[in-house]
Image (tube, rainbow, N blue to C red; front, side):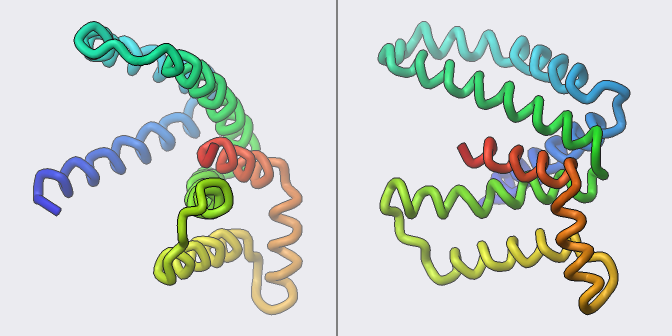
Length: 167
């Protein structure tokens, strides 16, 4: 990986975490994410228009864009609802981690993509991390804490957000 590529990945991760942090801290998360989407759409609109003009896509692309819009609306709605009910330290890793777990599993089930041993270990480590986030105490109380935490609406909504991310 080149230094420029690494810099772009780090900058992208920083921007992503920053907007989630700002969204959680806003008075109305859904409005914040809606306005952020509008601003980003306006920024990218000239580039998209130029790309469409130079390389017109097949008509099926517009159907896929419509599906993507619906999934993004569901994502922002679920993310907003989960941030309103749980801490950033729970919502963000659960939503992101669930997506990371479900994408390779979905690829294996629906696209017949093989999951390598390192990939399977990565899925297991992420799952252990999601379990650990929800522990409260040690021993049996930790297990009860996990069950209680997953019963809370914020965690369930964050999980559903991760399902939409994977979709």
